[in-house]
Image (cartoon, rainbow, N blue to C red; front, side, top):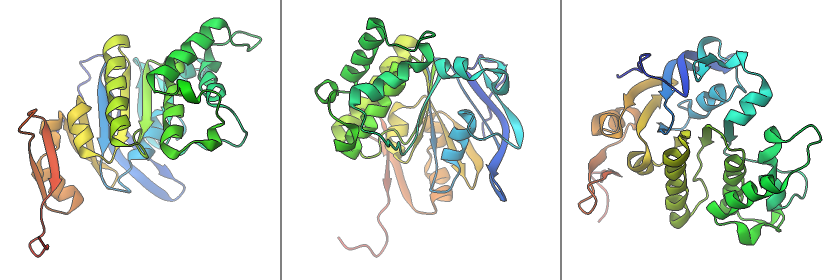
Length: 272
């Protein structure tokens, strides 16, 4: 397995992370790093520890061993306001108790940047509107978030993260509930942000083909441990995937684009 090198500058680095929940160890010595302008995909079967690792990176779970650094600084040395200006997180589920509109939710991303009185400026509104536009939400700005579909709600919280103007985005299954059109658009948007702003993106994904197509590097987890870490071609091999997912897979290349493509292999007794 390839391990991260400490010789390269990293926006975020996790070293030998052990973490879990009371009485339930989940992660066992996992190390990753992501550079500015890079997208890292974390993949693996259900229960592999993907979301737990993202929570450790986001500071909501403290590791029992190991360390997390943000631009070379220990995570626990960074105050909450500075952290919120630097790192945006989007979870799998985003509950909203009150009847906020879409615009109000996205404007919440500006909170770390507001002055002492906490009022949004015209500049904050401009940034929120641009985030809405990026995620095809301008027409829904006045709608209450409870009235939206699961896919629309997901895009709202991605827009809120963008309005935060982070240097690092931590995304837990960012394309869950989204249709094919919006999956492609979401990844295109974040690839643009990586290129334009040097944003680092860490995303957990179940979609191996999306990881292969959009990520610069991939971490493959199984049972809380790193199985492989490197480029998509290095990590998403038939041998690795067969071992981790315990099923036969086909790994090849799309004849039209040359992109890596991963499919379940037909079972011997499957009907035609």
